Amino acid sequence: MSLPYVFINAAMSADGKIASSERRQFRLSGRLDFARVDELRSKSDAIIVGIETVLSDDPSLTVKSSQLREMRQREGIPENPARIVIDSRARTPPDADLFKKGEGERIIITTRRAGKEKLAILKQQAAIIIAGNDRVDLHKALRELKHRGYNTIMVEGGAALNWSLIHDGLVDEIYTFISNQIIGGATSPTLVDGSGYAASDETTRLTLISAESLDSGVLIKWHIAK
Image 1: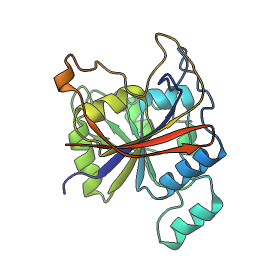
Image 2: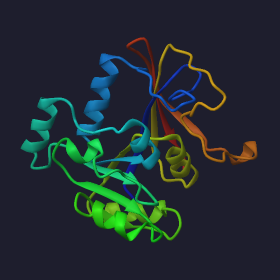
Image 3: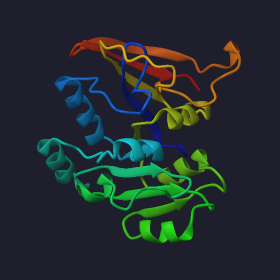
């Protein structure tokens, strides 16, 4: 298999929003879902986010549980999975939390249009993968990650990256925690944004794996037919 196993994990409101219209994050899930996400991270080889998620949320993307970190170390792997940013213009801030917190590899996947000065700075803190000319070629990026031994990849947003991966047929499963909240807002980001499909016969079809109550919401797992 030339591509890694890729799954999207996200929390969203009952009306499908993942943040406010100002891209401000809300606490959508509780203790049980946080623990579930932490375990998913601990079992992944890498975590991918888009540059907009880094700029708006500044996530560390670390495994929070000391027990889970120790488990990874006992298995001979870093305490955190590799943290990867899809960043076509090398806009990742050098002082981003993902550089400052936790052990583990950091990777910036960018393009030939990224500024050389910005790349030179980021190279001091992360491995650089060039995949594409103007926008990141996600097929090429994932093939390279597979070649480097990253077999299971967790995607934690945002909406534009989710769309690109799904549209390109690169996602295997989607896990969504749906909270008991309404956020609203015509411009609030949803689980998947991007350009969207123009006709119903073009849409990506899902097969339900499971649905269960969790915290004060519902966890739904989907498989994507390819």
